Structures are given as structure tokens and as C-alpha cells.
Length: 576
Ligand SMILES: Cc1cc2nc3c(=O)[nH]c(=O)nc-3n(C[C@H](O)[C@H](O)[C@H](O)COP(=O)(O)OP(=O)(O)OC[C@H]3O[C@@H](n4cnc5c(N)ncnc54)[C@H](O)[C@@H]3O)c2cc1C
Ligand code: SF4
Image (cartoon, rainbow, N blue to C red; front, side):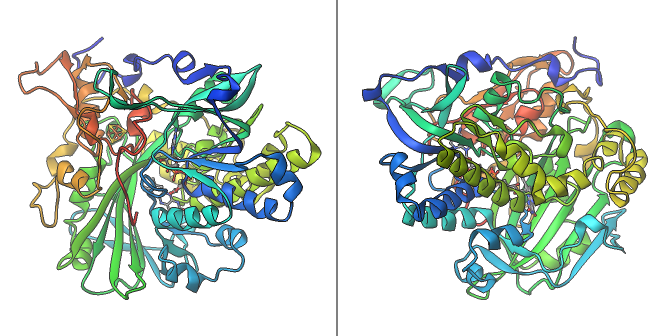
């Protein structure tokens, strides 16, 4: 099974998890031991909070329905310290959905509220054949951003949290939803996680048990294939007949810079990635200008890599550090200061990989439902719109006195979400064949809006055989000022996971070196270590420093499983 460089797929070493037994609770606790709410929304990110705000707008004019939802009509359950703490995006957004959600708020007010940083007026796309050359190319259609707005999703979540609270939502931060509660074939709520357990699961002095949260309707807004979303997909067979989900990982920094950047930049490589098909690498970068309300000039810079690669030494974190050494980037960042860092995975499969979005008693919204156009690297507007449509479908069902939420599926299909994702439905799959073969075909699919016959298929990222290659050879030695190592990056996220928290990362601890190296290089937070005296070939031990985890989710794509940590643990992003 192991030891021969290039023959080992992480899928052969699945995580020790029994999803349905561990993460689905059969039946509710007795009435006097649970909390009852109207609608439970799991995840206080863009999608979940858009759902909460839209629902509260609808209920504001309808006291009768509000009363039927009980004392707590809308509850949002968020594992971060505050909403926004675990949210990260590029993030240049198409503004229409957010304008529809908050029609009285102008874009100037978005900036005054501190979550938006300016309209895109100029843009440029470059090919970077080497570390010195940047050749401007015509802007491909997915990268046209004129008129869009650069925002921060973590700041937007804080704004949306405040709006929802003022409208009457009950926001439970520092609370992880750890189990989906299913009774008589229907989702009836979620269970919150215990707090105050030690390394081995033992109860510490401050132990607080979790609670069942019973709800008329549950909305899973957990982001990139979340913990309960995965359990729901299995329990209700929501991925039947769909293509497998595939993933990308993005690492981002925000810099304060001495002079303003006058345009939005994307680069399409190939440098610093390898173009030879055996590496399986596809990725790109962004540099977005941001001017804050104080008039300070900031820049959002990031590297996104598809998790389909085969060279185990591929590291999005180190690729970003390498990219910063390009002369194009030095001209923008040098003399500046890094003020934020973060990492997050995103679903890349698009239309064909979207699971069924409804099940009895519950709905999937935003990244939980795979609603990202990764050709354009855009999901925020789909998150807002899907959250709103979920709220409208739940409200309509309540008005009818019905429990059937399946109308949401059709509402998504008919909306801008369904239409836009349909047009790019076949554009990403050809890239699994590599840049050289895949890019021309992908281009044709984009121009024809996916009209070439057939449904392009693909395989799971963890099915890709890995080899220990030489991508790592280009990574710069961090100088701590301009280029950074993983641990100093995690340090500035405000990660507050206590040292004796229970382990929330499920991976096998003895695996072939190819798999261990994959995890070691991939993890942007430096969680996985291989002992120095481990053999060069064959099976090695893996040490899991889980308290560094920034919950990016990438491990779930490459052979492991991220579960929920204790509520409040993890990073505290402010401006990502
Ligand atoms: C690197 C990168 C760059 C991107 N660039 C762009 C861009 O430029 N433009 C664009 O439009 N889109 C972009 N996207 C996509 C966009 O950011 C996402 O589509 C969007 O932010 C997802 O929002 P969401 O609300 O679905 O999920 P998230 O923002 O992930 O929110 C989910 C929330 O749920 C919480 N949660 C999860 N599980 C639980 C649980 N069990 N219990 C309690 N809480 C839970 C999390 O802590 C989190 O706060 C990018 C994404 C990435 C990763
Ligand atoms: S441990 Fe896994 S989920 Fe956590 S930061 Fe590393 S790759 Fe991401």
C-alpha cells in the first residue's frame, strides 16, 4: 500500500469517523431539557446572517406568524467568538444581492459601516511565466469586475450580526452545533457541543454539557462543506446522482501599503506553480485595493490552489510567500506592513456538484450548498441570495401551515444563483486534466456557456495519487518582515484555542509518507508534523498539533475530517 513515491491516494487512508453514528442524534431530549426556537440557523457567516436578516424583515410585518415561532423566532448558532471570526474571502463582490437585502443602505454607507472599501474602476490580468516577468493579457470574462465592490466578509458578518440582533435574532456565538437531530425522518434541530472537556474528553472543572436546540426549520449555513452538512448529505442521500465535490484552498494577507493601488489585479501563472501535468497544479492569485474609512491604503493579496494537485509539497501558504517575491508584487507591497493573515477552503465543483438543497425540516445555503463560481472566484452574492431565498421559502411554508420546504430548490434554480452557476457548469472540469490540455477546453465551455454536449465529470481530490515532488524548492526562506512562516502567520489570527482542548481533527496517525507529507505541506497552519527520525519511505507517524488549526477545512478534501472544535476556539479574523 505504501512507500513507492507516486502511488498513494489519501482516500486509501480514510479518517476514523462514523458520521451517522457520531454526528446524527436520533430524537430530542425531554422538553424541559432543551431550548426551543423558531428557525435555527447554523453558521453566522454571509449566508446564515442574510437568511436571518431576510426572515426578520418578513416577520417584522407579521406578528401572528412571529408569535407562532415562539419566544425565540430566529436563532443563529456560530462557533467563532463573534460572527465574522471564522469568515474569509477575497473578496470582490457583485453588489446586487446585498443591495436587494438592504435596499436603504447605499454603497457609500457600506464603506462608512466599515465592511466595504471601494468600487472597482480599473483592472488588469497578468500571466507570470517567471518570477520577474508579468505579461498583461486581455481580461477573460470571469475576471471582469468593473463596478464590483471590494469588501471584508468578516466585517460584513459583524455588521449583519448587529442588524439581526437589533431586529430580534438570538445569536449564540462561541457555540458549535455538533449533531444534527433527526426524528421520524425529519431534521428537528441541532445539538450544541459540550464545553470544558480536556484532551482525552474528560470533564474539567468548568464543564458545561451541550443542549438540544429544537426548531421548526433548520438552515445549514456552515460554509465550505460543514460538519453537519456532511452528516445531512449522508443521512438524506443528498449527493445522489451528483458529481463529487472538489475543493480549492486560499491563503490571504492584508497589507497596509505606502501608496494606493489603482487597479484590481489577477495573475494566472504558471509561475510559481509547475505546468507539467504530473504536478496536477492549477491556481491563481489576486491583489485587490482597499481604502478604509480613515483613508488608509490597504491591499488584499491571496493565492488559491485547487486541491487536485499531485505533488505533496504543494503549500498554498508558501506559494503566496513565493508569489510576493515577484517583481510585480514587490512594487506594491514593499515598504508596507502585513496586518492580517488567514486561510480557507472553498467548494469548486459548481453546478453539477451541488447536493440536493432541501431535506425534511432543513435547507442548505451558501457554500454549504456548493454555490460558488470558482471560474470567477465568486460566492458572496450567491450566499446572500440563497440565504434570502431560504428565508422566503421558510416563511411561505409557515404561512401555508406546511412543513414542506422543497420549494426552495426550485427558487434557487430560477434565481440568479441557478442561472449563473448553470452557465459555467462545464467550465472547471476540463482543468482536472491539467492546464495545457484543460485550459483551451475550459475556454470554449466559457464562451459557449457550457453548451458543448454532455455533463463533464470528475473525481474526488482525495482519490488523486500523491508523490513527494520538488514544488517546495521555490519557497523562500521567511524573513519575518516580508515573507513569513506558518506559525507567525497563525499567531496574528488571534487564535485562542486552549492547549488542553480535545482534538477536533480526525486523521489516521500512521500513514505512508506521501500522505503525511501532503498534510504537512497543505495545512496553512502547520498542524501536521512528521518526526525527524521517521523513515524516508514507507509508513510514518503523524503528530497533530490541532490547537494551531484555523479551521480552513482543506483536510476534509485530502483524506481527513475537520469536526467542530469547542465553541469560541480558532481564529478571530477582523478584516478578511
Ligand atoms: C480564498 C477565498 C477567496 C474568495 N474570493 C471571493 C471573492 O473575491 N468574491 C466572492 O464573491 N467570493 C469569494 N470567495 C467565496 C466566498 O468567500 C464564499 O462563497 C462565502 O464567503 C461563503 O459564505 P458562507 O456564509 O456560505 O460560509 P462561511 O463564510 O464559511 O460562514 C460559515 C459560518 O458558519 C460557522 N460554522 C460552520 N459550522 C458550524 C457549526 N457546526 N456550528 C456553528 N458554527 C458553524 C463558521 O464558523 C462560519 O462563521 C472566496 C472564498 C475563499 C475561500
Ligand atoms: S488542520 Fe486541517 S482544517 Fe485545520 S488549518 Fe490545517 S488543513 Fe485547515
